[in-house]
Image (cartoon, rainbow, N blue to C red; front, side):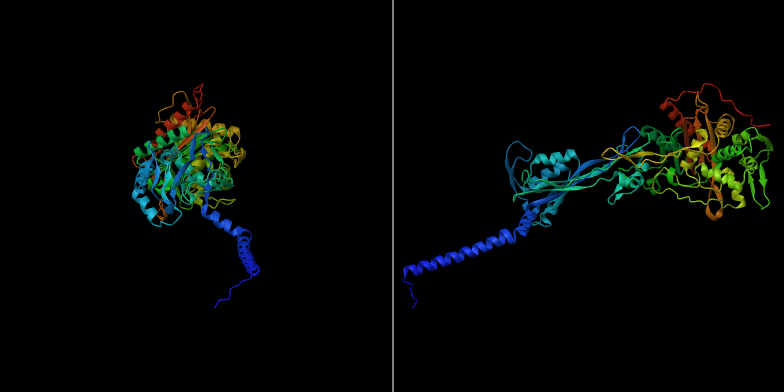
Length: 589
């Protein structure tokens, strides 16, 4: 039998003790929750309702010389959801009246507004119904994103990101390069990635159990920083003209590829660097020719052929070893003690030619006869000063040939001779353009460049190239060489080219044989024209090059494209016509 506590005071004491014990338990538990475990519980609570969001720092734009965007970043939006919160809701779904909206109706409306697939969205939600994250549709532009927002679906959220677009499409595409899933893949995008790349930031917001963002709960944890703007020297209008010109000519010639360059003589700025075929960075997969991912004008090496004779002639005059009227007896062919032999491109009887006539007729034999007045080392040194045998110092572009030649030529006896007419040595189209910029600029070479610099988000300028000019030959030697090159147009290998009305043009052709490994030279050619205008005060240099043309394998086939592009340049920049006819040196004696 249970003993009953009869003493009221004792019962009261027991109750008081029990209450105190119970309160003590609650106090201890409260202290444990609010003090001991407060931080961890608070973080766990925040983790359940706090949503991290990446704030993307925009990648900087690539612009032409006039500020026209060649590459830019735009906002794109991924639409995401928390599958555990997906349910029917009361809403207007973009309409006028509030109604009960089923999940299926919401997904159908979402698909219509975004251009997505309702079935794919449903599968994404059902894959893990209790999860807090699933993609519904990715990469929406602003128009489609706003259409999604207008639906008012409470359980869909945005994930903002930056996308790269190229407003000019294939115009300059080989120069800008393109972005891929792993970042910058080619061109200026790759070379100047550090300048262009933005720095991402982050923020968080809190949402309630119904998944709706709590007002005023957004907190920035790290500020995003935009990338810099890469300012190029390219004129996008002229770039388009150049690409169209060589594309049309290359297809007519059935050439494998083609390049063109336009240079401002006084500054060394590249106004156009055109390639065919080329890549559209908006649709890289459509380009089947992987060689078109980059600029062949900057990366592909070839034997320049007779365009290099202009540099040899200038070096001879600079050293006082020859003059425009210097006389030479020039046979069709020439043999050497080691068994080597060279010849001109077409048979001719022995001719009495001046140095001017040798350039005019593009005589291999003639240029070597006079060129041997310079030592092998002297000719090599002049070629290096003109910009051959080494990378372009003021151009940052992936895939440029290293071309690390030594201080002295490592040439065989035959190559020593052949180098004077551009055989056995390697150049790029840009390097040939540099030779002619030097001659046009009275013997001062300015490193060719296509980037002015990178303007950072705070307004500073970085990555500006060093474009300090260096003298290669005397002004007199350069001017005399340019004057001789006018004879190429008026009576030499370019005589068949229709004149550009009102302008004196100085130019040189090149028809280089293509080496086929151990087989030697075959029947394929690389044809080119490099020239300047107006000849009496050159403002612009234009080059065109065609690889393996089939319908016309001589430089005359490249002449129409040169004329078209040079005409466009002179007209676009309103260059004043020549005021007098060309005064030419005699070509024969």
